[in-house]
Length: 250
Image 1 (cartoon, rainbow, N blue to C red):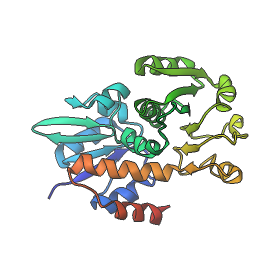
Image 2 (tube, one colour):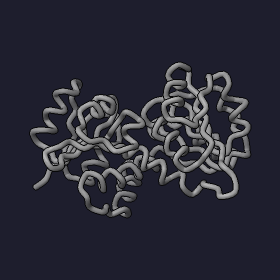
Image 3 (tube, rainbow, N blue to C red):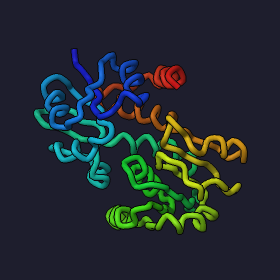
């Protein structure tokens, strides 16, 4: 029987292991050292889902990475195929699925992304591939500048510049794990807010108060689980079962 794993550290605080065990009936691999976790993958698993902080380490191990993973320099899916290690990024495919309903044939929606970590980068690239106008704001301007220049077509912003662009945005993607005062006043013109953090969301209540559509981190996790299952097993997932699992562990 094929075995599938989940590697990351720490993961005890995350809901990913619960969802993973429900989908694959396998236990996560929690190792502080990536090389140890990777060795366990090689020895025992057909494929693994990789969570923080190992997505960059995983990318450097693959023999063949898909185009999206090469643009992000990160993978969160490792699969063995034909004696080679393949890498994919299901974070990207998950957020692209969530953003697709907001495409506009008459104009390019303006997207403001807060953060430049793995999830935020995947979201920014997904929006760009959907032909949206993408701006990325981050405290470390050098990091966001390098990412935007590598991805091409995205506008890097210093964090203090973000409020003026937020007022013009159609879509806000919040990829930070902490609350920033500058998002306390969300503009009513936002078509949707997407937040990566499902453990301690910062913007859910504000969106509810203002009647702004809100996509939660659990929605993102659900879509990541669906696309990840397809990539790891080659089998179409039971999407209703995944949704039920997400609702149960929320």
